[in-house]
Length: 298
Image 1 (tube, rainbow, N blue to C red):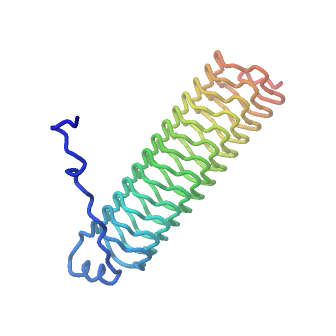
Image 2: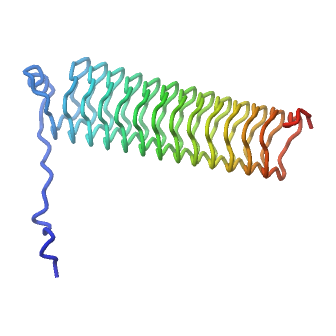
Image 3: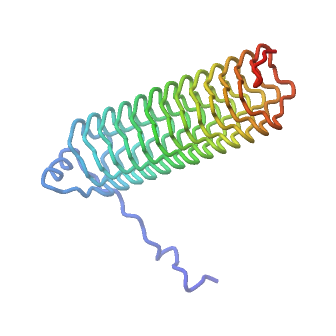
């Protein structure tokens, strides 16, 4: 028997159907002072180089639209459908993309500084050279996205899902990647100075030549990771797993590795002066040519 206190399916609110609009009509209404374009539908429209600052596109359907070089400061795209949309060099400072779908979109060289992007879908999205300084990307999904040379300084990516992401030379200094899922990520020559990666999972990741100096990585999962020639100076890897990882030629000066699992790791030619190895697991670890904490080489 149905609970009389609960609404029946027929009584549940039905989301409004998208309202179709043309690019010309949208621009005319914006020029007349209107800013509310919630739930509109404009597929494949050309809005490049237009000034649409402060426009409200919440839950709008804008798939395949061209916003290249547009001014969209403070625009609201919350829960909008933006798959395959072009935001090349768009100014999206302080914009709202919470829960939006940006699958396979182009955000090349876009300015997304301080944008709200929690739970955004960025699967296979192109963010090459995008600026995401101080952006909120908590719980965002980046699977197979590309972010070479992207700037994510001080961005928050707590519990972000970043499987198979390519972001060589990216800047993640002071970024918060706590508990992020980053298996197979490519961060070659990236900088993560003083980044927070505690509890992060980076199995099979490529961090060759990356700068992780003074990063906090306690309890992180780094099985079979490539950290050759990486800078881990002063990094805290206590209680982490580096089983089978490649640390050839890495800088581990004053690195904290207490209770860390380094079994089967390759530390050939690594520099570990003053590193902390209390209770670390070094079974089957290759230390040929390694400069050990006491300054001696084996």
